[in-house]
Length: 204
Image (cartoon, rainbow, N blue to C red; front, top):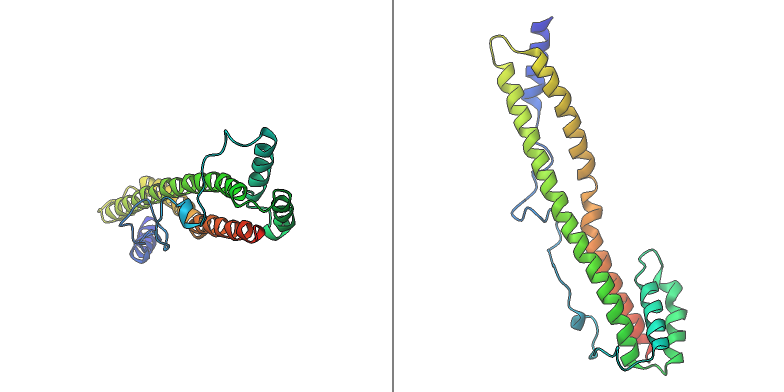
């Protein structure tokens, strides 16, 4: 019985491949196919000068700017649904590009900060996956060494095998979420560009 278990495990070990973390980890904090751009530039998205006008605008206008910017920054809200609100705001302020620039600046600060936090989270996630992959490799090597012994410690092998199955399941499940994580910074960039275009269009 023990010999049969030994042979079965030896066959399984011979067929085991390296975990899915065989991706290029030249930058261990960035597992994504997309090029890593850590910070965004407001000037590349908004073609007009944006100055700090916090001391020059009324409190009521500051509240209106903040409310519109906060709404625009909500990624769950479709921009097409907000377009009439943006046009209404622009018309109410004589299509003032400076005021619309204040709106975009507020949105940019919110979403670029959120994007930076996501990129940092991707880095932490990636390092965790690498660490788990190394643990899986070490467990496989230990199991292989134990199976190669004349009198294998099957109790120890059973424990390693159970933990290895669990670690591989966790690693695989997490790996499936990488694509979504990697797309999120790009989705934020696209939203910022779309908001910029919408605000510019509303000023005409």
